Length: 286
Ligand SMILES: [Zn+2]
Image (cartoon, rainbow, N blue to C red; front, side, top):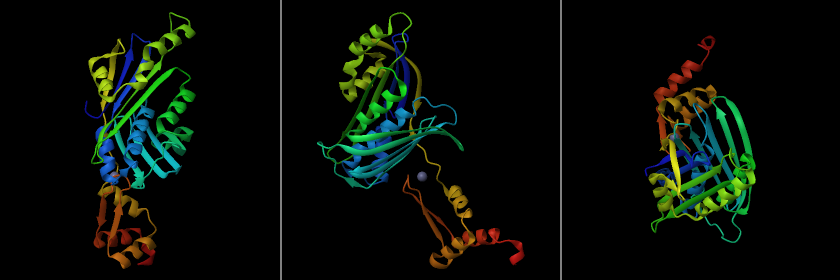
């Protein structure tokens, strides 16, 4: 499956399913940020986690996931919108992760509408993997039985082979007692925690997970999407104090702005900067 998010219902309402393939986005992130060694799988896992957190957003809502770790020292940020647009950044280029100690840090998830924050949740990462921390985050916030599996694979040359994930959340039962329904859910779906990436993909595509029929409600293509561009850069420059624009003109004769997500450099000519300075200077000074 190409990069996408699949939402569905299992067994006539027993559980809700989210399946994610973000192999392409993870590989783009690796290339944009020149990631090496353990930075690649960490970034890939964090991207899968970000898209999971955005699994239920609608309309103009977006989710931003920020991860700050002090061991190994690294930072990650991703923005995901409701139509499957993702951008991500991981720094530094190289980190070394110890299997013994895992990650130490925290992640912050923010759900928002343009200009309005809707939700903010912090989860600590305590000598563990991103998957474990995400599991705790989901368990704490959803209060339902849930099964999570994230599979990331890196090839010999360091590129991302696969970055997929599956999340199954039990829905409240109408027919049987909750305890019984919960036990049955665990027996049926627990093996999903260990599923290989290709098995996740073929189960979702085939519409059957652990012998239970999957009804797909929605398939959303996931693509790299960033708000940067020449117009955005000009708008940012225009918002700066006129003294700063004048200083750029004097020092460099132009302005260069680099997008932190795409690592693309935008150059604004001296002529354009001069026009901005004139536009921002109050008439009284002329
Ligand atoms: Zn960008």
